[in-house]
Image (cartoon, rainbow, N blue to C red):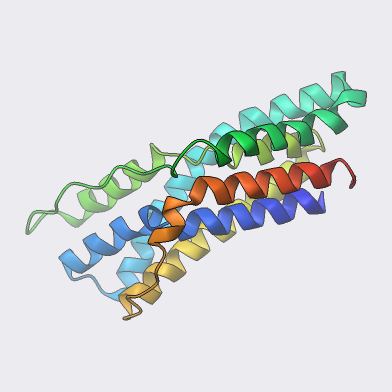
Length: 203
């Protein structure tokens, strides 16, 4: 379980750091001249929408993992880590990272509620698929494990996105995370493969 938790933490942190997860909110905040508090608040809303759609998918996969573990308990211990390794290799060699659609240019005097709703909807409609493998694997270990992985994803993803928006808004402009976006799938694949390999040796 520790290997799954560590992998979920690293993957959540990695994905939150990708600029297309938080830069659109920062751009709108600067265009609208929002305060730092409002910018972080909107980031929380958008991040929670993103997490919600991801977790809804994860619940289905977690249930599938639980069903597989109850029916094929002798296979689940090998199937889950094997799946992590296979998907990790596929991600590592599948090209650049995923992107989220950029929000439309913000016209002057646009109602604030519509802006926030648009940002939240954009993030909701682009769930992270990479973390789903962890939800499936956690489901084979029971509902408590699945809930812990989901809670880790929620706290780390939303917390890191908000922290990055706050840092960038406060003047730290040279975060130099563009290279991370270009190599996101390689990093993601490496995390998945490492966790999968560890799963063969750690209960």
